Length: 111
Length: 116
Image (cartoon, rainbow over all chains, first blue to last red; front, top):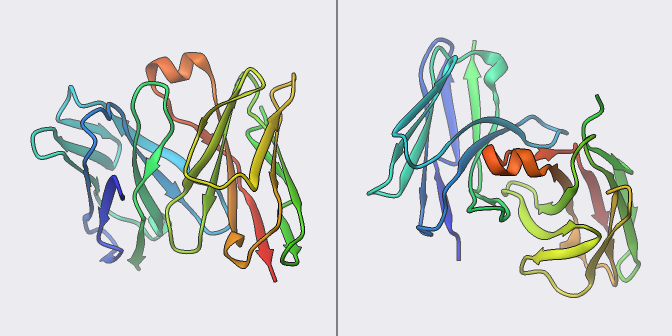
């Protein structure tokens, strides 16, 4: 059972555009939702995270929007740059438990 | 400040063999988790070690086992290797303080295991 569903599988955005990646979860016990960025040959690196008591969190060009009632959250990358080209994973966890990941979105930002 | 260190970076093994992967956590971290990342997939949780004991385990067979040492480093062992075990194996570490406020695990770069 896939507890975190992520879409799209791949995304091509022009430089300067907005990249949007969506995730949906099933387990209402989840209370922490991080996004990870992974470059080829590297491990995932924490990008930004949110707890369900807020609806939005912004850090630089990266924004998480959270809809608790719909059990959905999304990552918005503003002013996308070629250096943002990577695979992005949403994840979820509860308490001190482990991370449940989505299947990932391969983002390509064209120059 | 070194992050999470994994060794080796790449490994090729034959079906039926056994393999041991190693992980040194980030300084100050006491908990180590192992994940398997198949090509084109998200990481899947294998197990987590804390205070030298397996605290949680994902849906992986007993062929997968681990160990945590007093210095918090950890090993992942896989016996009777199958072709399907080919994947990137990631180690992630965390600390009590981080878990309480923002449990963003720090990942290593992984070990790429190829079973032929």
